[in-house]
Image 1: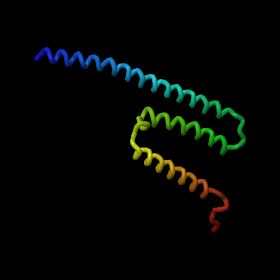
Image 2 (image 1 turned 180 degrees about the vertical axis):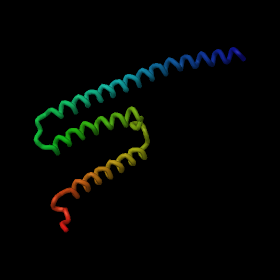
Image 3 (image 1 turned 90 degrees about the horizontal axis):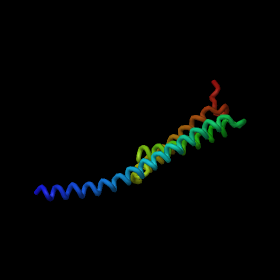
Image 4 (image 1 turned 45 degrees about the vertical axis):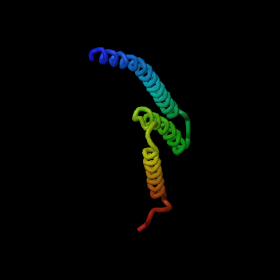
Length: 117
């Protein structure tokens, strides 16, 4: 009986070598994402120094970079990149409603829509 447990543990050791390769692959991926986040942060800081007259364009550039960084964090660090379609449907619905609420907020602040008493 001890012989079979010994051979079983040896088989587990071989599988452990395969797991080490998987771990190294995941660590490499996380380091690449971390590097991309550092680059995104540097781009955000660099973009803040650009002489752009339009505040809307400045905000659009910042939101674009932040969206990419948010995707990287949610996709890789929160492991959503391998999740099922239901997660994506919920995320898309959330983004839709956030965008709609931001639009309604900006639209309601326009002077033409102000109610004068």
